[in-house]
Each structure stands twice: as structure tokens, then as C-alpha cells.
Length: 516
Image (cartoon, rainbow, N blue to C red; front, side):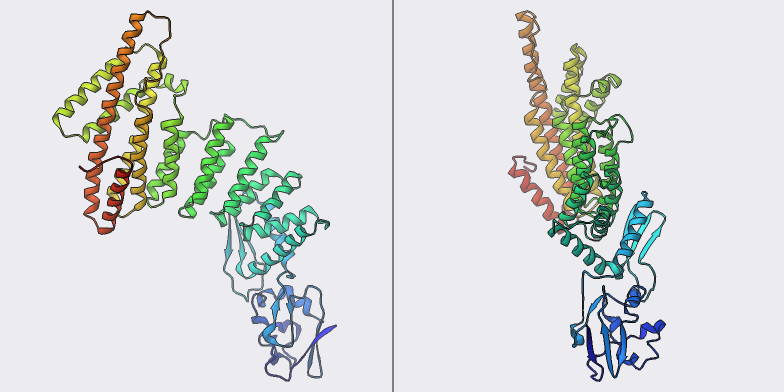
């Protein structure tokens, strides 16, 4: 069987000048083969793979080209040259290229990056590049390679009775997911191979790291890594040391940081980071610590002031510090007994720096002196710890508020900073509502006399009033500081003036008035 094309018509030109190594140039057919090699993507860069299939299959017969049927021939040729199309699932070089990629990945578990490299069509060499810890693939083979792997995998998926070697399926999946990792079906097929022990779960972390370097905002790759973490931790052989500094969770945070750096507003990376911190708490890991996350995320946000995705993670941590971590760890309280005093001094210093009224200053000083006296008089370790926890929560809010003040004053026209300030105002109101008094749920059923219990209740009431006054001063200081920042921002340009107006409208909607 063959396809016969009359060469006498000028409309049917195929051209094969690039096939000179096989003496096609000396044939009178050379002038009539002008377009064959220009049909994308099978260009001269692939002749090392295509020409052997053509050799001996094309011959001249009395002004005709006889193209005999050749298995894996990369084209479908018809009598009309405009209808020359590519068989997407037939690419003779596919298995060779996939094998080369697989060998590089298996032999080099330290690979850190994968990139598509723009390459000229006339380069007659392997499309797989490997240099140190970097893997690259020439751009000319991306489309046919992906089409080949895609067709093979879906044919396998649709035909349940078809049997293929797991290693072959893994190789197809490797190629397909490196080029397009947003196909959930392919990740599910890879999960099946891990469950059946055809793939090592630990090695899958290295593969998915390559995928995330190439596509840092790929949700499916992050979901796969989360599944791998749970799979390993839940497996019978998954022994891990929760106190180890080299925790697998620390590796996940490094991946999330890299992805956030490579793609702006990468909420998938920060959501993955939230999952890791939540998993750390549920599994009892000592590392990474929340304090390390707090410092690292602050440094990242100060380098990316327009990226609200990082600020949303800061809000997640701030919520934990202010509402979920009700008490300090016992060892922290014993190691730093005066840390509560430091946090209290910082809070009162912030309030004092933003209050100008003389009467308020005197009242604030009396409140500070009374709280110091009350704190020294506390004999109960639990009550002392609760008061320290209260000031610790406010100290984290204060640190974030100061960072926000600084970035707004330094950088113009960043809506993310004003949106983050909205959250800080809302969080302060929420904290005051939930912590009207850090003594409110304290009980004194300790067998003491009725008179002594009544005296303690009076002390508790007095403390409640003083904490309320402290909250009022804090709100007043935040108002004063916000007014100063808003005045500065309004003078800079009209766009930032609009951001400030939106900020004030939000505060009014939650009952937090700033301007009188």
C-alpha cells in the first residue's frame, strides 16, 4: 500500500533538501521537496529520528513519488499538500527522549530545576540537556512529546484490559507531568503506582520538586506532595523523629518559599505552607517552630511589599498567636521569666508615643504602675502565666502593626499594605471582645474563706476595669498613628488617596472610627 503524488503539478511540492546525507539532493526530485521539512514540529532538528524511517521507503518512479507505508511514520500525506498533518500520537523519537529524561532524573536525585530551552530547529542533537543540578528540554520536541505521552496514557486509561509494564507507565507519566502538570488524572495514576509499590514515595518528592520548579503555581503538584506526606507518616514503616531538626516538614517549607519567589501572588504555595504548619501541630513535630516561621515570613513580606499572598500567611500566624495559643509552653515560661515584663513595656511605649493629651499620659502611667504592682503580687503561677500570655498576644499584633506602618510610609501605592491594615484593625477589635479580661474565666474554688473570696472578686473587677482602660488606650494610639500615616499617603498621589478613603470606609463598616 502506498500514497502516490504526481510531481508534475507545481501545487504539490514537498521538498527534501535537508535529506542530503541520503543522496536526495542528487535526485531531480530535490526541487519538488521544498516544504516537507518546514512543516512544524517535525523539522530538520528531528532528521536523526525521522530519516531512518524514510530511507528506503521513498523512491522515484516515472515522475511519481511512491511513499510506501512505514510503521511510526510521522506524517499523514494526502494528494493535497495543504492537508499534510501530524499524527499527534506517533512520534518515533518519543520513547528515546522519555528514556533519556528518566535516566537523568533517576541518576541525579539532587536535581533542583527543570526548564524548557528555546532551541533552533536545525540543531541535530539530543533535546535533553543536563548540567550540574539542572535539567532542560529543547522546545522543538515539547508538543509532539506531550501529545505522544497524553495519547498513550489515555488509551491505557480507557482500556482496562490492556497490560503495560509499570515502568513504561511511569515513564509516560514523567514526561506528561513535567510538560503539563495540571492534569489530575495523571497524578491519580501516579498515586496508584505508589500505592502498589511500583514507585518509591520518597523518590516522588524529588520528581514533584522538579515539576514545581517549572510550574510553581501548580495546585495538583502541591496536593500530590501533601498526599505523599500523609502517606509516609501513616504507613507502618513511616518512622520519624518529631524532635529532629531535619524534619520533612522543613523541606516542604523550603519548596513553598522557592515557589513563592518564582511566581507572584502564589496563594497555592502559601496554602501549602499553612497545611504544613497545621500538620506539624497535629503530628507533634518540634520543627519548624512558629517563631521561625514568624521571622522568615516577615522578611519575605518586606521583600515583596505588593504580594498579599504572603501577608495572608502572616494573618494566619497572627491568628494562631492571638487566639489559638492560649498558654505559653511551660519550658518557655521557666526559661524567660521576665519576658512578660518586656512585652508589657513595649505595649505601653507604643501607646505613650501616640498619645499627646497630658491627662491621658498621667492616667496611662498610673495604669502601668498599678499593673506592675499587681503582677508582682500574683502568687499563682497559672495567673501569672495567663497575664504573660495576654501581653504576648498583643506584642505580636504590635510588631505586625509597626511593620505595616513602616512599609506604608516607605513604599507608595501598594493596595496590599492598606488591605493588611484593615485586618489589623479588625483583629484588634476581635481581640478586645474575646479578652475583655484575662481573668474573666478564672475560678477561685480553692477552699478559702468567704471574705477572702469576696476580696478576690473585688480585685478581679478592678482588673477588668483596668484592662478595659488599657484597650481604650490601645485603640486611641492606633487611631492616632493611622491618622498620621493617612495624612502622609493622601499627599503623595490620587491613587493612594483613593486607597485611604476605602480603608476608612471599611473601618466605619466594622464600627472602628478613626477620624472624628
